[in-house]
Image (cartoon, rainbow, N blue to C red):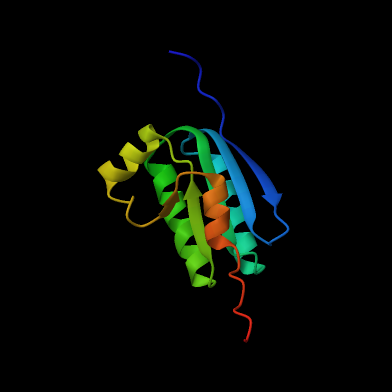
Length: 127
């Protein structure tokens, strides 16, 4: 079996104000997970509370990672925002189903769909 890829987070702000955190590697207990939780909390408390976690390059996650994702979801929601998970692989999706947390998250097949779901809706023009 190959070496595990370290967990990494690449952060980018879109013009729409939506924050995308592109995650890669294996999400297991450790400092990187704590840093992800801090990053999400800092974003939510500074009113950057429309967040997409692009999980298309996550190869595995453990129970610690699930706990952090649940915590991040609650934090963002408590600050009036929304957290969406994009590109969840079949393996990670199976873990979500087995642990019963799949229903908690807003899951989108791609990053672009998740971003569209968080984009402000154009207001209807008066006729």
